[in-house]
Image (cartoon, rainbow, N blue to C red; front, side):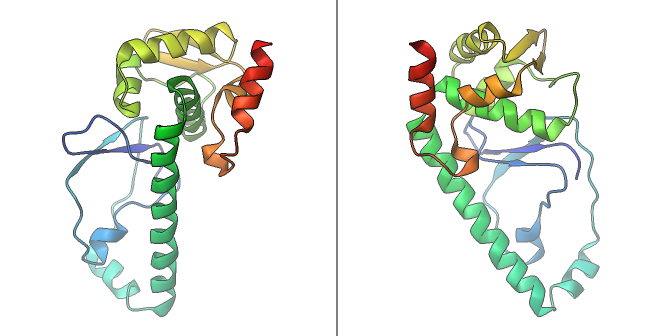
Length: 184
């Protein structure tokens, strides 16, 4: 896959994860697991490859694939736990900066991320007004430039300073200290 897909549980407006370039989607279905209803949609221009189920089933007979799938499932479970903790712990600004950085990395483009503030609000499960205010802060800090339905990351370091450290697995309060230091 090249691009990014977002997963939105049925009836919910919050995105629970993104599959980035090079990611694999659908292992659960290949092994016959029941998937909970959710909406999957591209959050960036996305291309993908669909593998026929028969060859996938043949590969599933190899022992190494079971180890791979177990590691993959554990990784996804950890990521969902970190995301849930992040949503409970961090401000809208911190979470927005993290997601903009994620999408910018997935886009791999210098021309920006084609997304509206309403779509960002849906991604984060926030009100559009909260996203608008957070975007203005990021723009005032010189981290992003906002254009109609497009965000351009201008300063990755400034964006990183504003983002929580959840993607790095270092949710140890370092961000809160950096933000306090910035405001002093």
